[in-house]
Each structure stands twice: as C-alpha cells, then as structure tokens.
Length: 401
Image (cartoon, rainbow, N blue to C red; front, top):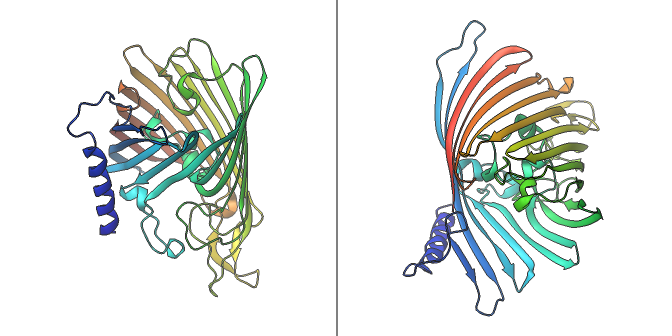
C-alpha cells in the first residue's frame, strides 16, 4: 500500500513540475495541467479534486432525540486524467481514488488490496455517431449515479442510489445517438460486463451482466451536457428535458446487490448464484435556473434467499430486492445561491427483513466557480417504517481543479 501511495505521489509531483517555472494559460476548474503533444499524437488533462464533509446526527430513541454524534471526513479525494491517444477519436479516462471510502472493499476476490482504480476506460468513436467503450467505468444506469459526485446538487446521492444503483464494472459498451427529427435526439447505450463491480481480479464468478439504456431529449441537447450535472448552472433559456430508461440483467449474480454487497458464500466454499434484474426510469429537466430530477428503481431476483448446495438450507445471505422513488428539485438564484429539496422513499421485499424508509432533505448551496468550487449544506429527516428515526445535518465544500 505504501508503494502504491509513493507511486501516486511521484506521478503527481512529476506532472506538476512540467510547468513549475512557467505561467500557464489555463484557469481554475479547467484542469491543473492541460498538455497536447507537439505532433498532436496525444493529450492529457490532470484534474485533482477532493470533498470535505462534516455531519451531525440525532437518533430518536422512542421518546426523544438523544445527544448528537459528530463526524468529519474527507468524503472523496481523487486524481483524474483524461484526453486522447493517437487520434482525437480515441479518448481515455483514468480516475484514481485515495480516500478511505474510495479504496475500501478489499476481499479475496481482489487479492485483499485497496481499490484505487475507479475508471480506466478508452472511448473510440469508430464511425459517425457510434462509440465503443472498453475498460472499467460506470455502467449506463440511473442518471443520478452517472452524474459525477463532483456535480451533485445535495451533499451526497439519495437512498435510492445507495440501495439500487448498478455502479461501475469491467467490460465493453456500445453507444450511439440518433436524430429523430428537428432537435429531438435519442441516445442508445448497451453494455456487457463482468457483473461483480470494480477492481475484481479473481473472476469471473457467476455469469455476465447486460445493460441497455435509452435516452430521449425531445427539446435537444442541454448546454455543456447539463443533463449529466445537477443544478441549472447554465440557466437554460429554453426548457430542456431528458427521459431515460435502463434495463439491467445480472446473470447468476453472486453478490447481494449484483455489483456490490457480500459474496453469497456456501459452507463448502462455492458461491450461491441467482439472476438479478434492475430497472430504472428517470428524468432530468432544466429551465431558467429551475432543475428537477426524478427516478424510479426496482430490483428483483429469481430467488432472494441464498441456500446451501442442498437448495433448502439458508446461508444467511439475502439479495436486496425492492423499489424506490426519488424526487429532487432546486432553484438557482442569480446570486449563485441555490435552494434544493429531495424526497426519497425506499420499499424492500418482505423477505429481506428491511423496513421501508422515507427521507426528506432540504439543502442550501453557494456556487463560487460552479461545481468546481462550492459550499453545500443540507438537513435530512428520515423515518423508518413510519416512526421517528433520525435527523442529520451536513455541511461541506468541494474543490475541483
């Protein structure tokens, strides 16, 4: 681990020393380094970022709220590299995570090592509107998950996303866009991946994972790809809407949430396998400072209860199945202050034993340089099975070079 950190540090210092004696023409938020080879055979942009959070939480004990618990964390700390190689039609992205939350998850299937690599993917525009992606990156799942954690409207993503997203995986993706007439655009995204999440080295266990997503933009594209960052920072002059639908099938999945969760181990050392299906329907709307995002998710499995080889005795592992709804909206004032609100409800299948959860969140943001430099705060009230449960207040800042 020390060796890996040393390598990252050396790479960082080497890159920053390239222009150490020069004044660069770049600006904050455009990347710490933007380099293009003299013969235009490759380019690289280096953009580190980190997020710091403070959280205070009050739990309800059935009679009153107790003393608060406080926590301060570096929520994310990442090094991002992107550019093109050989030709502008062949792009790449590498993103490394350094915080505890970024690298946690060591197990026997990744050789018990930290999970530093978030993204390592090439994107080849091989013909017209066609792109082929290969490597490890986010699957074309729910819009909230694909939006970068640097570009969120509230301190962090919703309960819907934490329970039912399909996240990153290793495989290939085929992407295409079609003009349906006028400004009406349709985007098609298809993926075949390993099915067990990122940084797995001891696979493939179980079967493969198949994902298909369709996106419809009836009023044309958003400014600066605004359908994939939250808040209407570009103040869309005309209404813009994206409707998305995703179908994900994880064949013979061996983890409780497909890409994540515990591996469903049997006492004989083999893995329990069951087909898991996840569907998403979501929308992103922006106009003149107002933004709205809505999502619905549902996960099902052929048999949620993992069993031993005899097919009868439970192992204790259960696939997390159920559905969730997330509604989120905000308004950005011309002063670059924003108010935002979110409503999330999560319902689990009874077999899981998990109680239904509802959460209400209210947030206040100050954008200094868009999402690249901002201060955020939010307060959430969460109920578990309709009972008073928790109040959480969070505040933090993002800095993204």
